[in-house]
Length: 357
Picture 1: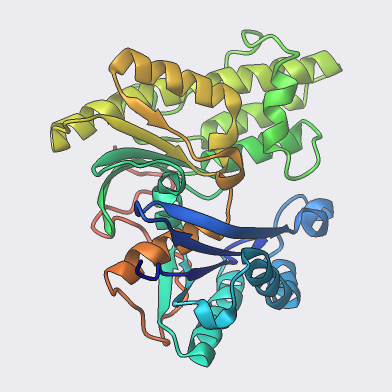
Picture 2: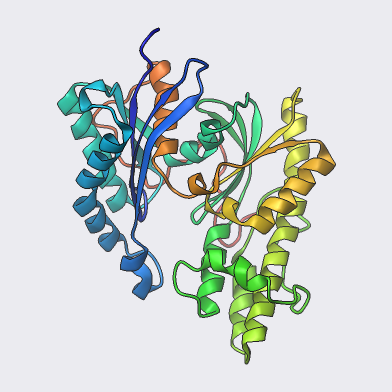
């Protein structure tokens, strides 16, 4: 029996300090041996959002302990590690630099290969941690910093079909929660409040709903929420607005995903139609249910990572590292941190006012 690779993954792109060790079984399926995540919610709560300098300081204070804990929990020794994979971007550069520098130093110290990982590729491949799926597949990546439809062709090969032209969906959830008086990070609480409200109470805008292909926009929706919250008088009004917001987002994603399905099929003519949803917002149960039902209508196999792997984590970074290790795709130790690092580097940059769709 040949030795299976053992990969250490490190993640510090925003406000989670994370480390994970993974290997694979005889069938080639990944096996997560440890997955340690330290959240900074309590640090940033009073500011209503992530403060980059405070986040970076917390990473520096915790990363040594987090990596040691991941190794201890894996039951394996440092000498058994075959490569170190660290997130190199995209993200907050002061945060990225902590995990990236630590990963390079660790790899150099144990004289093993270093692999710089694109955080988005981690999300893109995260379903492979618990599902045996083949390329190509359609990916909807919805998180606090990104909202994209991507055709995943192979490791390192991605075609963007649609993206947000302004705010990410996760940001819209968090900002709506803040306007409703929910403590940061409150995006996940919207779904809970929505259960008590009338989803038809407020008629909210659906920006670029009837144009722009499967591109997305949430800035106008966020502005409408801001305007309405100024007139909210009761708790029930809050519940109704949360329910209306949740329903509006579901309507937007339903229509845009149908368009993405069509584009994906036209470009790939796949034998099997597979739709993967990843990123922090993929933990929203109502969105999961709506997209699951849509997949049934359109004969797609739908795959979601486990809830605990939807948000930022190091298991997905180690997963990419494992794939690249097997192909001997290593990085130099001078690989820079990249605050902006699109998966499809040939895609046109769409961001901000005046974008032509």
